[in-house]
Length: 174
Image (cartoon, rainbow, N blue to C red):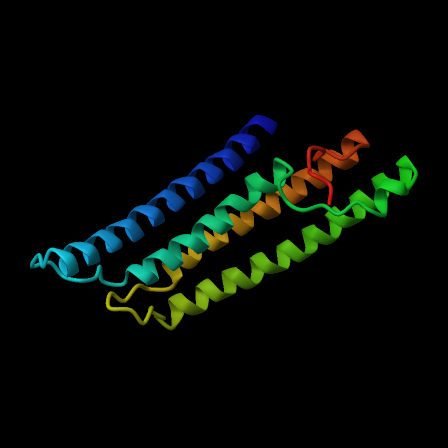
């Protein structure tokens, strides 16, 4: 089960990376299109319809899809100024308490994101750009990333309790 979860987190991280690459490609295409029409006077449209909307949706998707991998690989900020001075047993309890609180908070975020998606679908909310996009579509990537983060937090909590030591150890201390 450990390897499957790590593969899922890694796959989400790779999806986020490819989405960032797609954003860079889309923005570069828009810049080149502007350059070609203004400098060379080519008979091309001066803008890619709704490119800013698409870029924003992709940025949100990449951000949320990257969170579980970043969390499990120790990339999130972990301030241990106080906990590093505690005895080992107290450090473990602080870690477990922090992960338990994170489990509840991320679970609540998942609940409300799923509610947002349902409302967007139910009321047929769409983006305001030139190309109307049903908002539930990009919001689904947000939900997938947050649900995977929730699983990663629960996974870390269980692993920390089971091993008696923090499972995420290679964070850079702040």
